[in-house]
Length: 253
Image 1 (cartoon, helix red, strand yellow):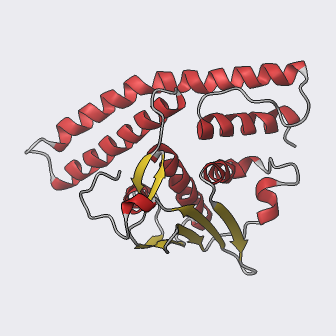
Image 2 (image 1 turned 180 degrees about the vertical axis):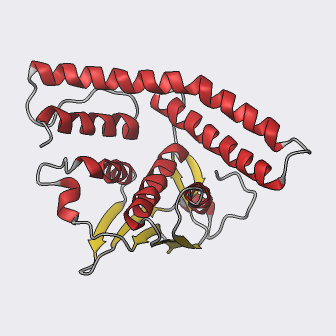
């Protein structure tokens, strides 16, 4: 059985990664040991991000050298490009958590999703089906990356070894609608967050998603089929300044 301190640690890490580096009060009381746990966990996350920045940048530079090598095979260059992109994203996540970057910008959700799908296909042996409309939101790109990667990776793990995952992005006049469906084991929505809002340790990724969605005044829905499979839906307000469609090559990330 998970200890109370372990459950609080999960919430602390969730909040630090989701909402930037800050200390929070434990959800149940403010005992001295809980306060110390908050401080230690926050410092540990910040130290981890600090120590990751330099190696991530080094790996990215090496991957870019390999990608530009004319003697490398097309497959090697493709893998190097993927490593370079993943390293860049790690650097961005670390910078955001350390408070180096802030503010929102226009983010092309279809581009974020496409990148996450490419990464997932390097290890997931099943099938990933995609149907992506163009949709732009005003948000931190890092947080949109965390949101999509958490949902997609959770779905792939649930559908392993050879299941099916479907991810769709649609839009209407006001919102972008993201749906991730897997054919794996049924997930009990009540177990995700629990009566105290903490949920099981294995649902930390979904709790991070909930925090991000709440930050941008969106909606999160989780539904499970009677015979298995889970659907997670996220609605996020569109960036109305982007217009009906954002042309490829525009400034949206």
